[in-house]
Amino acid sequence: KLAGKNSWRIYQAEQDISRDMVQTMQWSRRIQQALENELFVLHFQGVYHTHSNRVSHYEALIRMREAPDVELVAPAHFINIAEQSGQILAIDRWVLSHSILTLATRPDIPAIAVNLSGRSLDDTGLTDYILELLTHNQIDHARLMFEITETAALSDLQDAQRTIQALRQMGCSVSLDDFGTGFASFAYLKYLDADVLKIDGLFIRNLCEEPDNRVFIKAIVDVAHGLGKKTVAECVETAEIHMLLQELGVDMMQGYFLHKPAPLV
Ligand code: C2E
Ligand code: MG
Ligand code: MG
Ligand code: MG
Image (cartoon, rainbow, N blue to C red; front, side, top):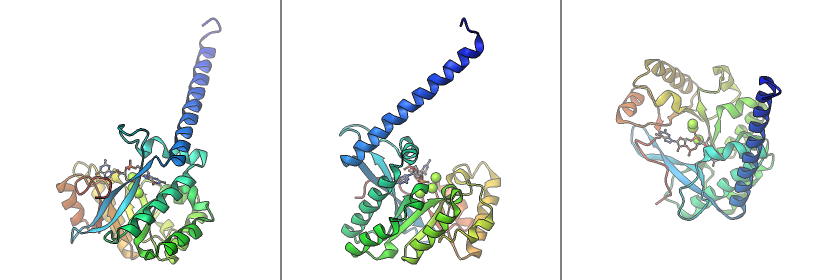
């Protein structure tokens, strides 16, 4: 106070920064413990074919179990920190190996889609790691799918392009996740040759109130189909939205209306 208003503001900012740093370090330590003590859990959410209403595949979604009777920690709390610290590489590999083990023990499950962080796109050993797991467990490669966010793909176009190509050559399919929010022009689809465009929930959740979103979705569907790709809508929460998306020609749907993420039964 004696030094005046400006110095007070600076002091405040420094305090904020160090508080953030402490929190990041604490989370990073919790992630490390979760990796070492098998405290991660996978939930699975069905993705359904629009016309037949049958399950196309399940998306694997990670959670952290900190104690037996405590609510699971959502990925929003730790994925960003794991990306900053580099721990996401170990997390992505953990999710991969557990998804492949699930495919091996559950032949009734058509396929599992795994989310890959942007950091994993330059993990050069990743494709060999995947191939070895698939071969060892004798899994049909088409049963393993990948989701890469549009934003991650754009931030390193060359790595994304190389990874997508390698995974598809292996016989796995690739979706561009959260599509439509990453400021990609449609021209990028030439370089990011994925099988599926997964339309971000931002366009889906308020579809009934925002007529403009129909225009965006229709455009994405047209471009996808013109290029021989499929579309998925995420965050389908109501019957009304499901019907609108069906009219717009979206090929597959995922959301609380159909199936909430849960352990496999
Ligand atoms: P995402 O890949 O776009 O996953 C979809 C998110 O939307 C999931 O949140 C899912 O639970 C949620 N969701 C599904 N249906 C609905 C719905 O009808 N309404 C609403 N409001 N939400 C719905 P979740 O599980 O919290 O995951 C958040 C994000 O964290 C994921 O977004 C993904 O980017 C990331 N993530 C999750 N698991 C993994 C993982 O194993 N590895 C990596 N690298 N990232 C992951
Ligand atoms: Mg996803
Ligand atoms: Mg998504
Ligand atoms: Mg999303």
